[in-house]
Amino acid sequence: MVQKRKRQLVTLSFGAEPGMPDVPALADWVAKRRDGGVESDLITYLLEAALAPQLEAAITIPCSGGRFYASRLLSSFTGIKDGVIRGETVISDRMIVADSAELVLQKKGVWCAVPAPHILSIRDEYYYDEDEAFGAVADLYRGAMRAMRDAGIYGHVLICDRADNTELAALSRQKVFFFLPQPGREDLEVLLEHQRRIAVDKGHLEDVFDLSDEYELRQLVIIDADHESIASALSHFDPEQVVIGGYCTTSCESYWKDLIKGAYYTA
Image (cartoon, rainbow, N blue to C red):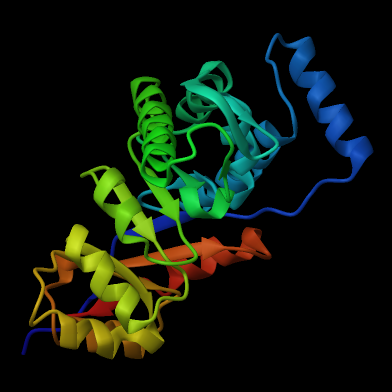
């Protein structure tokens, strides 16, 4: 009789939302970094805080960034002021390239999570044409992601509040993963029109199983999986297609370690 063994599944991060540091601690951290010749600010701090617990837990595919990266993106979008398009839009990539280089120093192959365009709520007071304004924003996103990849970032997670067909059509790429933490079935259908992988919590697995008959699905990421949801997924997909995902919004020191502990099956 062959004895069953524990087999580890791949783990993947969709970013994190670390808590804000107190002002004295942040000021001290920034001062020490600047003394070492490294330009730093709150966003730099949050990027490091998001990534460090993942590296300690040995997440297979770590990802820094999160919704908090919105301010860095907006500050890099020349022509947009206070969330409003007021002139010709150009990417000013100095800070996002510096962020990327710093993350790559900590972990080669790291991903970066950023908020999707609709989360930025950018308004147009320049083009006065919805399609042209969105095209300008999409160009900025493509330019930002390209600059970050050139600096060593492996790929990007776009965190969403909804599955926006226009954004997916404009920005879907092999190294771009649209992630909707709380999708409805219609959202899943829109996502699967554009990408061959999907991330859901255990409550939406049945929807994915149903939709897998209609759409080609190469990878299923289960957010905060338990053994029951893993077993259910493995009854529909091969082990190499099932990944355990996480998106930490609180207590990240223990969150990623717990994710690793539960990311296995027996066979």
